[in-house]
Image 1 (cartoon, rainbow, N blue to C red):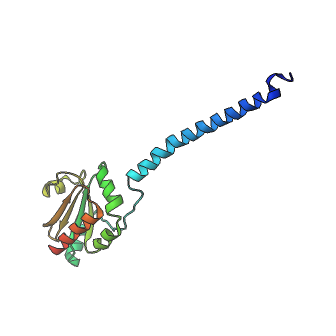
Image 2 (cartoon, helix red, strand yellow):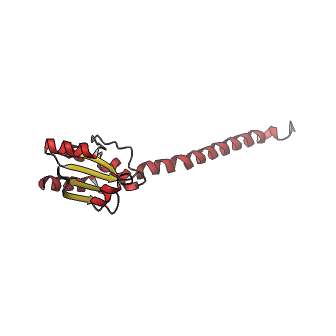
Image 3 (cartoon, rainbow, N blue to C red):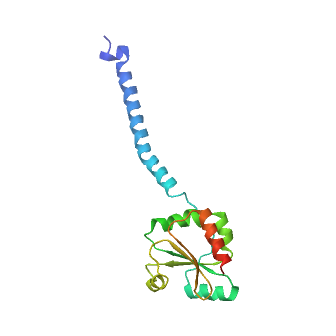
Length: 162
């Protein structure tokens, strides 16, 4: 025998087997990280970014509505609301919604910061989108997450009532 088990390559086989085992562990670790990350990205709706020119200035929005004759589209949201974020990613980033938004004064109101606004309009949950005339009178409302096609219909309804 020459050098113990090396004659028939068993040391070489052990090393190859060990390398395969290490590669297998690496693949498993990468999969454990990558698959949940990809799933989260897909479930969260990708990285849609809205081009709607939102303002957070309530008085300014109604001044703008008075001078332009456009109704105000108010997204009442909170920072902790998952469906509010989903509306931002999926609905407000939709091309058809963005095009219709040109006919409104878009306003975002954080419900946690503006309790008086929430009380005045009887907001019961988030997200709630109000369509208001320049005097603050309600034309239409959408409560909860709404898909882009349904939201476009709501926008058209609000426009027909203004």
